[in-house]
Image: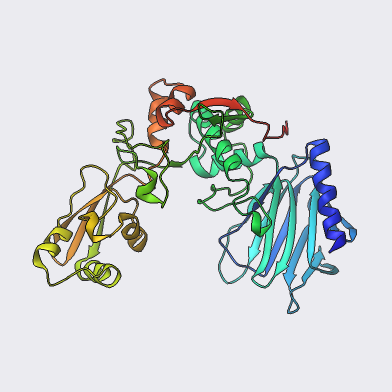
Length: 388
């Protein structure tokens, strides 16, 4: 334990002195696995334990880690056994080096490629894998994962600024678990390094280096985004149990004719009504109430289904039936209910498809940010570390 603490302190000192990796991101966070394989695709690495150096790990070579019955990491390189460990560090020689990583188990997980360093630990739930990565490299991966590779550079500038701000605001989100962020969408989707399909992502991140959003007092601005707000943004207390004054619901005409602006979903009438009865004491013998449920209309975003007095949050219905948004209306169709919805996601903050449409109309990244984040302004953060 003392050796591990010393190594962590040493890595922290190195990070401060030489600009080493400055984010600790848990990857493959939504999967449990007891073994994984890696291949050094580009560059050279060193493998360390808390006790010290173990071996070189060079381009073209492979590692395999297997959790044994004693919850130890069984490490082999190119089939050669290297030992049993509680914790391993895989450290790159150059920031452009990257690995291909594939967890192995009952559920098939596609391999991904990552830059940066890695910390591998064994616990009772399986293998935990952390990617220690530069903020700007992380952002390139986030932009690829969250927005794809076909957007204009001006849009990537927008996404880079809000994603950098989000990372800054949430850098302690998983502090109690020993890392900063995870790769799931409730942090930000981050599915590996950006492979360079389009220079626009790299340039969008680089051209906005260090820029974050702050409020009028200079405090970091809370940033959120979703795919499509459906023509009207949501307020935070409609989706989460918190009210942020930065977010007031307002119309957004930029996204209403885009790809994910509208959706439909059928649900069995019996299943829907039984859900309401079981979870919210909904009176199925009240014919008028049942009629209201089957013919619920939502011209403007609401927080509760039918009426607030019933205490049925729309966010709960969305979660229960895996709906694209809370912005929907209902109509009966035989033995089913047709839900006609608008938007995709929580609808708070930036509407990605709306912002992309604004870019297509010639709006600048600064104009887009001012539209979606009222009262915010740009500021330079010391948070990123330059990796170029």
